[in-house]
Image (cartoon, rainbow, N blue to C red; front, side, top):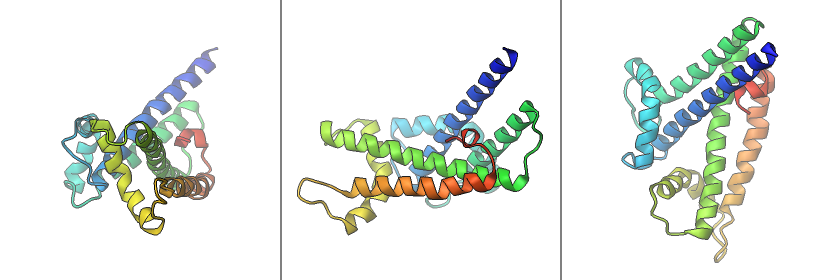
Length: 197
């Protein structure tokens, strides 16, 4: 019974860390897509993640350009440290450093792909039920997915009222997730559940 409670506690902690990693990568993607910084939802994400990101901004510097390296580093270090802590608590000992680093990269890639996956679903639903929605959440989703949708729309323009680009992006997300992230996790030799899958 005690080991089951301990295991459930570890899974809960791992899930909370993965949710925070999700928010960190959302912050990274909002910056990369140049989404509205003053949107209330953007501000909430920044406030929640700033305590951790602030630690890394000290030596990586403020955001320069589209890619916020401090946020990326914060997510990577948080995930790797959490995996080490979980391995130590369950008594397995320290896993190989190379495996941890690969698993850290896989966790970041997985979080980014999940954000795009869910954002695409929200965008598609919004296009059906509220195509001209002005809610801050709807605007943020549109700003988030536009950088990955625009290049696809150039290659596959809408056919009348039907836009096939979301289907292509969904297929690409699933391929990258299956091939790249799956390969990284196999190379890391660490459970996918621990990485965040």
